[in-house]
Amino acid sequence: MIDAYEDPGTPDRRGGWAYLAWLVRCQPWRALAGAVLASVWMVLLAVAPYLLSKAVDDGLEPGDTAALAGWTAALFAVGALNAWVSIMRHRTMTRVRMDAYFRTTKVVVRHTTRLGAELSRQVGAAEVVTIGVSDVHMIAGALTVIGPGVGSVVVYVFVAGLLLSVSPLLAAVVLLGMPVVAVLVGPLMSRLQGTEAEYRERQGVLTARIGDLAGGLRVLNGLGGKELFAASFDRDSQRLRAQGYRVGAVTSWMQALGMGLPTLFLAVVTWLAARLAAQGDMTVGELVSVYGYVAVLIGPVAFLVDMGYQLSRAVVAARRVVRLLRLEPAPDTGTATGVTTTTATATATDVADAPIEPSVLHDPVSGVRVAPGRLTALVGARHAEVTAVVDRLGRYGPTDATWGGVRLDAVPLDQVRDRILVADNEADLFAGSLREVVGGRRTASPADVGQAVWAAAADDIVQGLPEGLASPVTAQGRSLSGGQRQRVRLVRALLADPGTLLAVEPTSALDAHTEAAVAQRLRAARTGRTTVVTTTSPLLLAQADTVHYLVDGKVTATGHHHDLLEREPGYRALVARDTDDTDPGPDPDPGDDVSGDTDTGAAGAGAGAEEVAR
Image 1 (cartoon, rainbow, N blue to C red):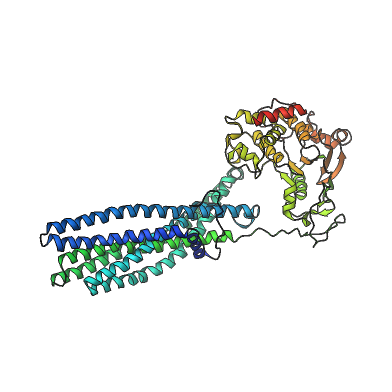
Image 2: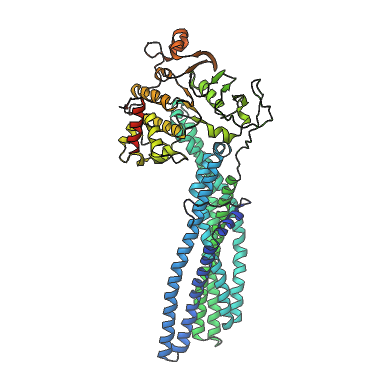
């Protein structure tokens, strides 16, 4: 079975059947073992009637006790052996199913991670949820038909051979039974694929509606649109239910034929065998064996019908997976788009490497210029205008920004991401231990983790958790308060240690005491590194080397915080929180504890790092 850290391989994306075949090829020996064990299991089931007929003809009818005991012992031994074979078959096919389940899950997760931000632009969240909840199970379950499917064909041929030695007529009836079943069930299989595909599509739409409802319920209540949305949801539910009835109708026919046809088949063969026995053309033991053979065939025929049903549903699910795997992220080779500014040295078709040395970041739209190795603050009355500057400097969308005189969108995206990090104060937090949450993709030393925790004034969080950095954190940090989540995000950003850090409102949810500690420690931790923060906090602004004051998305004034307070009334009204006519800024998180450690010196940094490392 695939290991949790093993490469799942490259899936076959040509279609649903090709994907299912790839899952089989990934575990050929296990699939072969399952088919062999299933074949042996079913053949031994058919051997039992043969041994029973011998016990009747050679022992019971002539009164030969020794022969009866011998054949009975053989029947018991075959039964015991077959019980063991059945257990091994079941274990093997369970491993086949689990391998397909985990391999498909890993392939889907790996590809969605590769798509990144492109995922939400190309496919809805409901599609991904449906694949993870339903389709993966259907695909994995369908692979268990490998064993029973192959075994059914083998035992069908084996029983036909045994019946040929008893009666050619009965053998012909058995051999003709399977084509009849295929003719009757085949059209239903194709119809099931069509109805199942439509059902899955409608299910995805309804899942998307549920997500929209859960995310916007408060807004809908405020706007009075809850009833309208509920009515739309009810209509979609009714359509899904009607489509489910159509799928159920086809499914019920397939299952009815799967059970009814073998039973009818058994009745016909038994009637023919009884007539042959009455006419003296067949012994009593042979009659018993024929009945046993046909009774054994009920299982394989039902397996084959169920195999068609399972594969029909699995192909539909596999097509959805393949459709997701065919999505590709937008190509980004560093080719600039848009109008080239006069400060850029790259043309609209040039590709350039990132500057080797720390260089100036310049956004010509706003006029923001970020000097390397300094702490720069962006202040604006409208949050969206300030974050738009960060998006352009971080290349999260169309941009004319330059980096050391080179257009930022002319630099390959991987180089930009390696050296420029945008730290959003609402960035996702994944479930795991606190050390894993802040570690990201890098393995950091305990000293580095301790230093980052100290710089973000998060040492009280580590000390307050029962197991420190090993304590589990739920998805999105729901087990933490708002201020704690914000500091954990800052720890993660600092631990990444980017050449340029663009932090969006890194202290907006903190109380004044903790905010002051973060402001001083952040400056100390990022000494000599380029750092940009968006904020209206005077505590953080006082630490900045340069402050850009933006009005309507344009730089109106640039300077030190205290200078801007004296000469810019608008700036003073925005950030001076000690007057009645000023914006008080975001409320601190009521559940956020005040950090008791405000020592910003080198000794304080070392002590905090050493304490967390311990």
